[in-house]
Image 1 (spheres, rainbow over the protein chains, first blue to last red):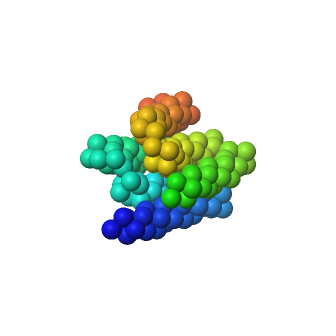
Image 2 (image 1 turned 90 degrees about the horizontal axis):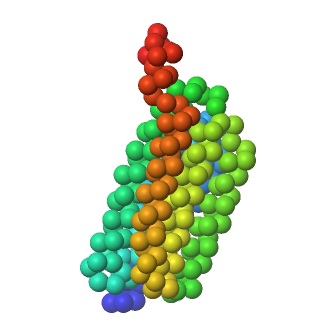
Image 3 (image 1 turned 90 degrees about the vertical axis):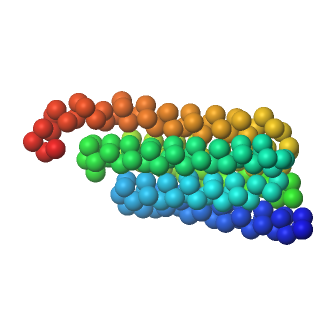
Length: 97
Length: 95
């Protein structure tokens, strides 16, 4: 049973790493600010979410699991809101900056 | 397993470090803010991995705090760089 959980942890964390890498490459390579923002937010939510899912079996007891899910939920809320704010700022400042 | 977790945390920090190049190159300050936001989330993920690997209970709380502060940094940036109210007055015709 614990081997299966370890396998889940490894697979989920590898997937999370992949999304972090994809988001960062997107942040560097995409032409205009809004598509960069799209790539960045994806890395935030999916990358961190998969890592948290990978870490859940290793969290000690219910409190640890709840704390991990709380971290991910707050990052989800924060990065979604911030993405909207930055998109508004980009639109107001014009695509040049 | 802990070796895997620590190497994953190292990989994330490396990825975020390459993401910071966007701060140097970014044409606009919005792009620089995005890289800072990515740094916040990447550091949170690395902290969670290190917490799980070394079993330090406090590190998860630090990750929680960092996740919130990263959001505040972006909000402060948006309010200073492109405040919503003031721009509406200038571009009254456009809005």
